[in-house]
Image 1: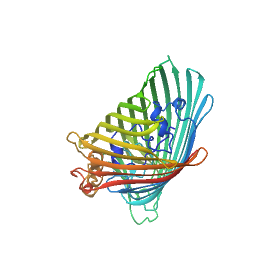
Image 2: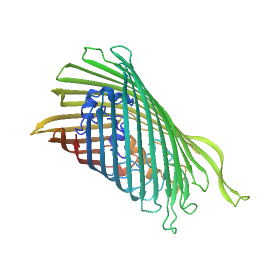
Image 3: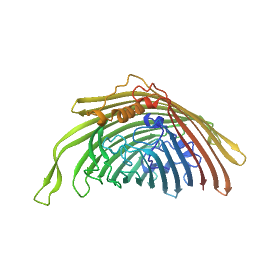
Image 4: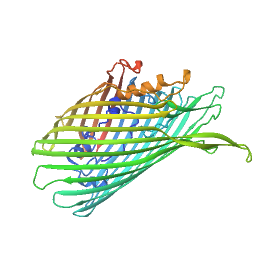
Length: 532
């Protein structure tokens, strides 16, 4: 089942490596991806017709799990103390000509010591973050649902539709007390056609709408708080609660995506191949002031292109090989508006802002190439032993323009990941154990700059820019493992338990942010599930 994923907080290793394994779900016995991700070569296409090619076409799952994150090696704007309670229900169903998937999920998040970011589900590369510098504890509630359908019109033509909705609410009880409500909604349509006995061509398109409202509330007006309207790389426009105690911001965004796929599966031969070419473009725009006035908080425009090839082959029924190579390129352009506050004396002295100029204040370009090999030993057609090696090379260039001219950050990281896992029959149940390790290192000298162009206590380079740069570009090592066990409790019903631990260790010289020295970030997860 294809999930609409929201990665609110991940380990630093995973978040910055610019690489994601093709088999992230294959290690979860409760997930249909434990089978389908391995054998359905189209699994990670967002074309809804992918459902028609699943090996496991009818299954259900109910899952409750708890995860917690602890540590000091985390990015600015994310807390190092997070607890999540997660509940999820989902499944697949196959009918004669129809395949359907669906899921519902709820997450309750509590966090401590959050600062420098009051947004929720914003594009992580969008520099126009509204923030305050007060460390606070808070809560996030997230509800998500999604469904997809594939319909076989003829033996050679399939069509599909899908939709997903995620809504979230963030709040805390420390002045200046941000309250953020966010939603993301997407609709997907796709089709594929067999051009011959070996070739299948697919086409899909998606539109996603983003909406978020953020407002501050001050309980104690005797203390003046600062609001930071971030513009990227530590550059900001400052407001205060003395000017506007209940500062408000609205984000609106839209993303268009398209995907072209070509699958080659010759009859009678033990191999198949799929090529996925995808592109997306969109924007997120911030508008401040609510109903009182209109202040433009910045426009962010982005594009993304990706090419991936997955080749799967087997020379006998006991062995399966997968080779995945890919490349992607993303760019972001950020526009800031210089504005002047005026007063309309003819209409009740109403304050408003006049746009003086529009400036391209920041540009970002990310490029990455990945390669992964996975080997599976099968037992009666099911995974028994597996190992995979994933490598990625990523380059990020960030250019910021302020009164001091061009400021440029740049770094290139090489990432390596190794995963080993084994399935065991234990009593009447099935037990799986997995170990994983990763290493990320710069392959050339990093280039640092700050966009902050103020001095004294207003300069946030030391608390914001250096931390962000060091966390993104520095050397690190990751270690982790997981176990999963399930057993039958009734006909076609299995009960399972699982646990995971992943840790990221900072391994660089703390050149730009000394507080990272000897730090780490650990995420633990455990839960119970029912498959039916």
